[in-house]
Length: 441
Image (tube, rainbow, N blue to C red; front, side, top):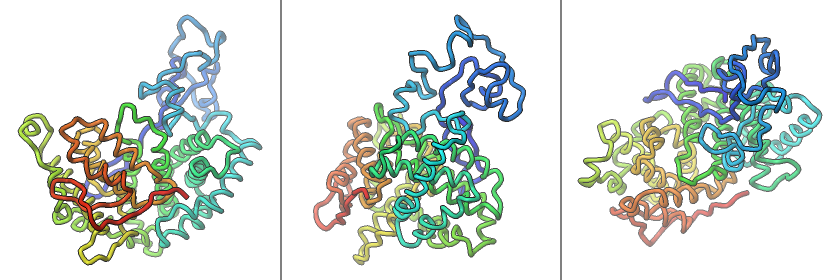
């Protein structure tokens, strides 16, 4: 809908892109709207978007079997197919990224919109902002600093509205509005403004841009529960927008170093795994998970494999293994907060090649993804919920029988709601384990 933006670099990897949002196609819209991939209202002589931007409006496609006077755009009783091949009606029910044009007339200023935004900001100030942090280190940032910084950043302001709306829906905080519809609208508007602010990142706005990126990641994760998993596909929109934060970090790294007093610098210092590649990818961390890398004769013939692919699998397993070591340390000193922090930033720190393999639905990549989602039982945040359990179970249903043995541990974990020790064969062992509930606030 807004196209895609690509940041220049990411630590140790190539760039990430924000996912495109589906929109309702306009077959006979003007040339500029089709190029921008936004819905054209086909008004003559100038459509609403060209008029708003004072741009030249060119209609170079003629309608067939009807004219613009016969029927208004989108008046057909048959739903138009979206880019994903799912009808507009179906997509609205299952995808968090429905078609919302931030320049549509009903999104513009009105009394109803002002009242809704006041309601959303009140919810964020009193409940949502306080419910986001995974530890005390970030409480003030989300509860107090974010609303203040939003006064100078439309992207951050819209992200706050989007997050408050989905919070109201999931936790039944306010039923006076359609939470999912409102969330989708402000999410689209936030992404639109975020794209612009990233291109203009500077010492004046880098904190707001970073905070917006974080809230958007939470929004994407919160809406995973509403996505269509029939047939199963990886949650690519979440992976891509989360991975974009890594590229954003690289783009603003010089500014962060120049401002050690900023909250972004403080959060970076408190999360050394972001820049410590040895700790992140230490081969010793994946001991006990090597069976996931085993390949039989059939795999050797048919499975895509080279040094880069092997490295992508190994380093991702090392990262996951590092989290498990925090939860089952030899000295018994469980570091739950650090484990939770590492789970949240997972798509930011794994290598892009692994994300590519996941996007291609390679079975081994999906198995590893299932291990990640299973460990989310340690989270009790409302925006995480039981998404991990849903993803693990659907990955298991999707993969052929030969991969099921590797999935025994993730399946046991999500059923028990506990992190269990792993045998060398990938089976869950009985004995001491960390029981962590997965509830919603």
